[in-house]
Amino acid sequence: MRTLNAIVENTRQQLILRKEKLSEATLYTLLPNDPKPSRFFDVISMPKKGDIGLIAEIKHGSPSAGTFSSKVSVMDRVTAYEKAGADAISYVSDSKYFGGSLEELKSITSIAKLPVLQKDFIISMYQLVEAAITQVDALLVIARIVDDKVLKSFVNFAQINGIEPVVEVYNEVDLDKALRTDTRIIGVNARDLDTFEIDVNKAAELIKEIPSHISVIGFSGISTRQDIEIYKKAGAKAVLVGSTLMNTKDIPGTIKELKHI
Image (cartoon, rainbow, N blue to C red):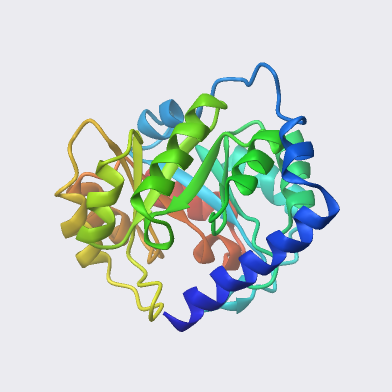
């Protein structure tokens, strides 16, 4: 877990700096009084186009792929994803390892017509308050990096504050933790965060164990329609596509092919 541990530790250090600039007590005063209800669950569960929900991701790089060389600006990419038929947008806000920022996330949420999922390594309630202030529609919570009690508190806080929690799991241990929360969405990651190796078929087997009342998103390893078919046949309602969309020179064509539009 060297990379994962390093990312979590960096997140912890960044939180110390953020709290020095803005205390947690002050941050709570900025919470919206009347949070808008999230559209994320309905949008990914019942896509208007194609035969599966597709969450199109924006990220500047990753530990496994390095830095992406796309010449499409973030704002133009948001528009391109919307026009191409994506159902939601995902943005990775971690700065050191993925090149994101809360400032850029705020810019995205201010113009996006589609629901926005914030992906980060959430270890503190401080980050959930930041997400609520930013008014994201959904927030990724990785089951592996927090204990049961904290995971439940994160899910509950998100739901109360108009955010759809998406609990990410990789194995049966993670899944058991997720099922002990009130989450309505579970993301099954085909990427092992210990080694960064991808096994879509293993992820598909885990999806089959998830109760039907929960909407499942397939994460990682999607480059072709065939990959989506594996997730879809296992029971996934949606898939999240990152590197493939960041690398393609034909965003509309790629999304239409993946979704069967």
